[in-house]
Length: 199
Image (cartoon, rainbow, N blue to C red; front, top):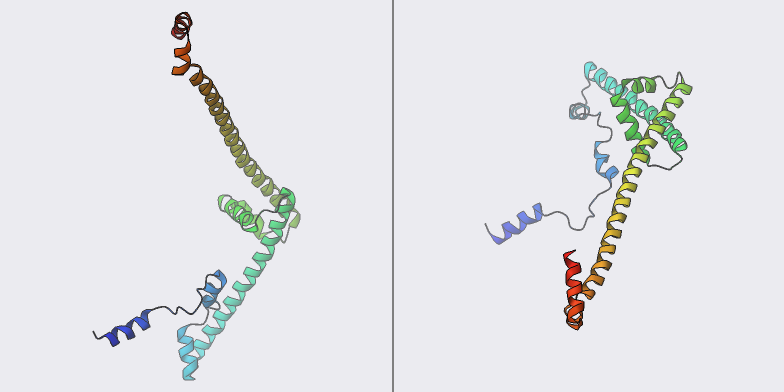
């Protein structure tokens, strides 16, 4: 391969170093927005031919997409209210994603929560009581984590105190029994210490 061909090939493969790397999740996912349009529809639209069956399918897909968007909006509104109630009950500004994940996890474990969620607009007072109970459940789990952390802290403090005590005792012991101090003892003092070591 010639040098010119290698240079042309590397230019085609090398990423554009002048452009910024996109790391924003929303920007990365934007290409998947409005994915209801298919390549078949685009080809039909460009050719100018419109088959009645294709047109009905396209309208059906648009209607389904509209219904999905409405359901997402309704879900988001309901979940935001649920998270708000949970924060009020707990008395802390816990991240919404954490609380939402907790509610979803509990709903997966217990179908009745899912059923209550579906019926939340018909009986908002019952739903609020359920959310309050979920918040207390979550709060209990947080206290459990807090207790584990407190126990770990207490254990660590006990180990530190023990090591500090041992270090101080060892230093006194080392000085008391250093070679210089032992050599300075009289024969009688040395024998007394020696007998105390035998205990």
